[in-house]
Image (cartoon, rainbow, N blue to C red; front, side, top):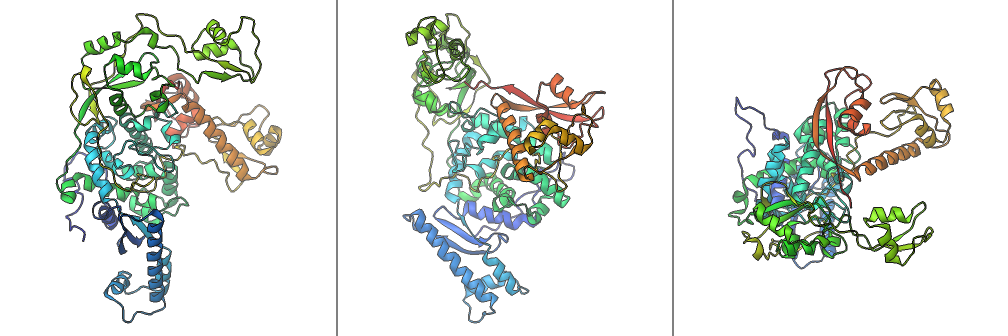
Length: 636
């Protein structure tokens, strides 16, 4: 039986400075209580068979043999669904005599006015939800390491600190969590969205670093909030994506989370998206009152770490030796570093904020840095040791890109100065040049922050740390998410690239009439004639253009158009990330292009994405817009 609770959330008292950003609508209370039950009463050896629209209708708590295989569990669920489908067909046929108390409970749950169609429709809505109580309890133990720092980071960015409970829903606070769809880390970022805000590649994956990922989550939340205007929709967009929620707002004419959850019928707005906000509210309630649900909890302890920015490319074993830190300790503290770093095929990259255990003073770090041999500090990233020459490449260019001199490259291959090479030939690449004596020292980035170590750190010279022994369920699924993951996740571009019913498109940033001609297979002259444009006239952002689909379909055109924009964005975010936003007030005579180029050196399409409701063809002096703050990423 579930706990009988007072109202889960308290509205602010009269005179409070700000309203509760996560008000608890009465219409959603039943759904919140369903998820509280999932998170606190039903373990991963159990599950609820329920109606996927009316979460108050739970048919049965299914229990699995702990030794059962996934296939046996699936068969158990299918058999149970079949039983209840037969029961509902019986009710639809009017066969309601001699029912058991259990059958009567289900019959009465539909109400006195239920029709045969109501019972038949319910057959398609029978759904199984695996319990999460053991996993949520594990998350509470782990969360102690991260929650305070997460809440602090969110608050510093202007994001409500309640969002710090969201990793319970996403990953059970497992910073190493991977899902079967490719999401990773505490915040379960998909690569496409993550690359807007942090580094994600084969050398460094900052999704796995709780600090970097939390910064990214804060920036993504602020982006979603700017587009949607309410925190309940912002949280929902974390799963569904902001584009879909903007369409819901436009279609239903409201930002009311209750109306959208209950009435929006978007093609991809399924069970996970509909339930993401109420699941978050449930997780927040359980997190705030953990001992009420689970009793006393022994949490993992906090320890300290210090981030130090590296000025060179350095082998990780050389860093461990210089700082007298066990290699395992560095691995625990730096989960964003991928296997090529640890197996020695790549260096820890220049600019990476390496975390060291404890809070060593500056003098101790300087002394450790002095112990690092100059020959272990490189000016470029280590490569695979060989390179196949591509069209247009020269040996001098390959040498420069690899951080070695042309003479060293030639010597490594036994070639003379006049050696000619051809496309497809393999060149052996020696290690890049090392630094000379007296090169730059590392930079301590900030005050010490909590790190996931099992106990307080001893002096630096004595450190030998193993990974913390975290509780793990016996049957972790492939995905650690408590709900199916959808976004952050999908692309953060909310632009609608589809062709309108009248065969027109709205011009977006970085598009020209030449693009439309290429994508549709007709000439620019034909499109100018169709739109009655002068030969020197240009299409501008926000204008409507009529297209000719005699050569390709509107769907093919839209797909090509979407691919172009996503490739454009992927190329930009291969070298940049968004580190925040700045408010800017438009001055007289300024255009979008001038603002983007002269004030922030930003691509116009990115400024437009952050300000989708601003008409940049009629922007007025004094208009407030958001400018994303972009920094370069060293991808080597």
